[in-house]
Length: 234
Ligand SMILES: [Fe+2]
Image (cartoon, rainbow, N blue to C red; front, side, top):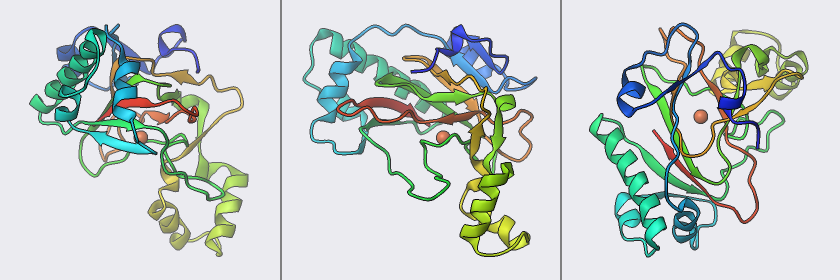
């Protein structure tokens, strides 16, 4: 686990202290990640264990399933906190999903474009990504000025050209976009990776036409065998 964002000097992250502030603080002036810093009470690992019974890779959990969980008092407290977050985001017109994750699909390509690779989210219209890790290893972040687009790293570009089987061209650029290579980043050798932490609710910048800040670069952490993650994502 990398150092929590709050312990590293991070000009792109701004901490806020309420959901209202998280909603209404603009992502601008270089700030591309807003964090409602929280210490949630409750036993989220107990909830993860209960929800993860029989889950081999990833499952989306609905509110009913959380409500019906057979857990103790502190598990119930954790479940209520998650239900509150779902309700908050729904009331704002979002469609949050709660995922219980053992592992994500992995891309076996030379330059993998899966969620374990640093990337930015992209959308055709104005939107943000919301996320919170309740249990397991938190999502990981990379500062924009410590990252390079993977398509701009010479060795990677050479490998991608070989995979494409052609020369530099408009077709190659289209190929890169089609396969989402343009959204993936590599950390510079001196990059200080950071952790989104547990229990905090985040709103991060997405690459959309007109976005005034660089999109927030993030990834899923490596799987820990036997461990489940509980993640809210919207
Ligand atoms: Fe993402």
